[in-house]
Image 1 (cartoon, rainbow, N blue to C red):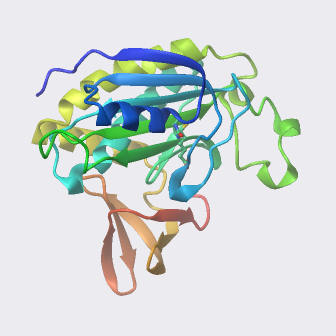
Image 2: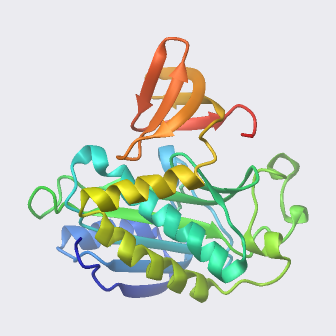
Image 3: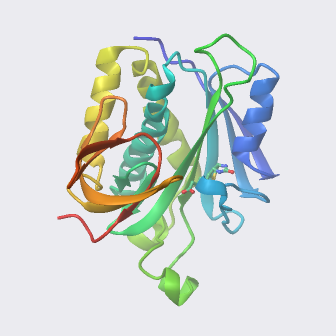
Length: 258
Ligand code: BTN
């Protein structure tokens, strides 16, 4: 197992996007373990080209630069490492245990608590295998404080730690707990046993497993039942035509699992 590198945390009142900042730093050769945290992002990015908006000071907005020695098909495990560390941090700091909706959302019941966005710069400097991967996470901490903060169409689909606990949650403590869990998880990515253990953790925490799903790909969509997560972190879906393994895509839960 590779020894986890200590994190260097850089804090900002406002940044365009913590992911964009680290991708730029990575192009200048920044090492693995650099972390960017912002109170507010003016151009926060979500998956599939969406924007990620959060009122200033209301969320944990953080990205970490990794340079894992992984095959391209194993890179999803970087997203999983951050998502699972965030699950543990929410539990330790706030007593809230989110589930993971494949590939990258943290949910409480069916409401989104956090999203993860991993961006690889495969053209960046460094030899193959040490290419930078930036994994960013936005965790709703103080917003929404209650359903009154949400437009009707978001009630039930968005939540925060404060809404779940009924009291304030310390963003700094959350970041500290997240990084404490992430160090060993990043170290574990370096061995087959570590990767298998991480995939097993993802299976345990993944609310998508057992759920009827619609998988939306760039090329179209299909429906089935999510039945497994592979050791690379890919989703296996049973369809009338047989098993299909999804490496990247958006998943809609057709109704809540179990
Ligand atoms: C999603 O669910 O679409 C993923 C959202 C990821 C948002 C985080 S906030 C910190 C980091 N910086 C960004 O610009 N995006 C990620």
